[in-house]
Length: 129
Image 1 (cartoon, rainbow, N blue to C red):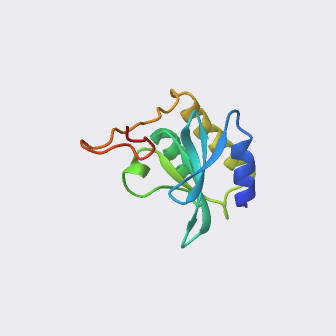
Image 2 (image 1 turned 180 degrees about the vertical axis):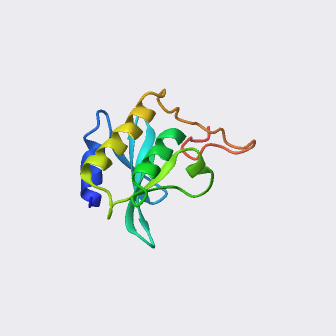
Image 3 (image 1 turned 90 degrees about the horizontal axis):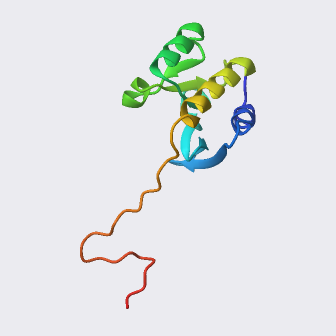
């Protein structure tokens, strides 16, 4: 059985990982991209999420059905996988987080978007002249 602290420790042990927040819950990023998150689930308490490829997701669900499930909707179909901390062991969690980190670290850094204000408006941080 893993704890949220175990999840954080393993995730933050990956090279160049930063902790941040997304939609009100902690996330872990490399190159500005999320590879895992922690959140509260009504049924299971605190759960993790890892970003797998669909093939990795299928393998983990087959090998560890009590610990891994696809997230709901399109996210799950794309490989986002829920991790039950109350059933997963540290070795399996470490493998899952390592794969998720590798999947995301191999991608180009996330671009920072700078949205243009709608026509006729000014950016709130800019002063009018």
